[in-house]
View (cartoon, chains in turn red, blue):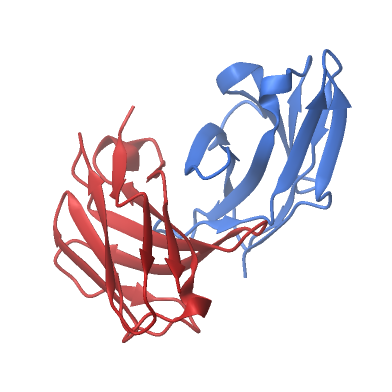
Length: 118
Length: 115
């Protein structure tokens, strides 16, 4: 099956700093990538959808200036949390779709990145 | 608007017994339906999906789900639960008529299988 990786798997940062999370599709071209946020014991909340080479589409209530998403290539999308604050601490999960994934109506999920802002 | 309801926060079952995790959905058109499993501090793993065809869908690890259009349900089932099935399960829906891959997830149901 298709593999999606995320880096780092966990990160701790100081309040006010920026953190970049990478999402890579390892064995397929991801024309579309999604970024989700998951709070403890809660469901996934879609933050934004990004298509390769285009600006990301953000869900209502998600600050696009705070959560910068770049999808510059068919195998890489990045989420940058700018000026992070403790309330940004969460589990961030990406997913990707493209190629055969589109044919099979699937999206493949990364393992997630746990962000802790002190 | 799309929505997914998982009415049970938690399901407890003894090992070897059958399990059911409930899911109902609401979409304006015809749905694509999915089940995912999540283990602690991990991403989501795909279990099964309903796209079209047979209402009974068989997936990974012995799980199956039945699409019931009249009841707008897609309950996840397994004939004999294992302790290793203990995890968080998410039902998800996508409206095929709107296109794209925007998927809405239910709140999740935590399954505990006791030995």
